Length: 113
Image 1 (spheres, rainbow, N blue to C red):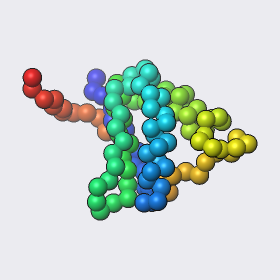
Image 2: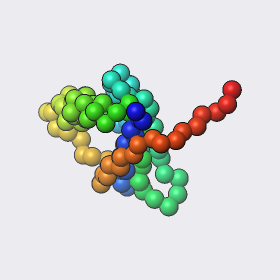
Image 3: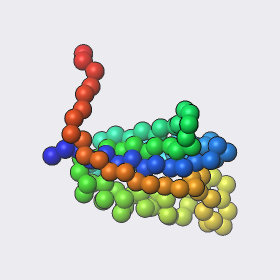
């Protein structure tokens, strides 16, 4: 059964880039223990776009959906650990737009030893 790749395309204004990257850094380790999780990368644009790519790879669509409905929902919607947020108020999103792309891995390569 081939792995599933999910790429979340986040439109991030220049003045919010550092905020977005800090928020991801503060949640480091949040996805790694999820059943079926295989890989994560946050990709910063170098030129010509204001879109970041959040790349995750999963053993199956079911594993991704379980994470979306559990741990991910808690990390993005739960109360609690905002940086400097008072009274339970959620910080303003760093991204102004988001699109989710889904792919199935049909071919892959890794470095030769």
